[in-house]
Image 1 (spheres, rainbow, N blue to C red):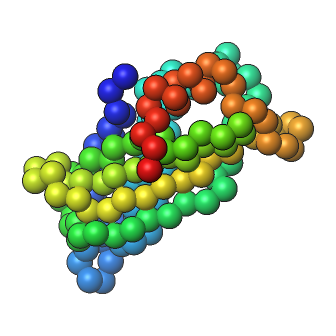
Image 2 (cartoon, helix red, strand yellow):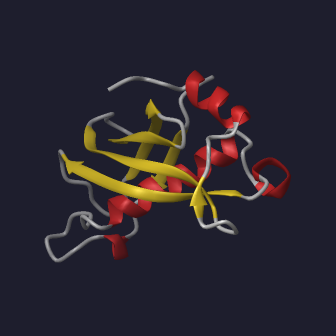
Length: 137
């Protein structure tokens, strides 16, 4: 399976007083990449997910270079770690034209049943796909 990539066009409203992309905008880019990741692996909809959803246990971002309005960024998503009820996604953000690294981030994702209000085991069909994309840190 190819590594999932999400293209993000940087809008002017995502920049700050310094003229570069605001630090908070990167979390939106990574969230968009996570959403598209689940679409790409076809783990969406009630039929696939049953009652399992996700909770973000932690998220982080390291800023490497500046990005600006009008640029297109590419967010590449991989899986760094898989536990019994959670997994860690890694995101690398690069500039589309140059390939230069802009930022890198991660998110710890917990499978969660909102009806029962408890964490749940990663479903086998999801685990299989996650293992195919596993790139240990």
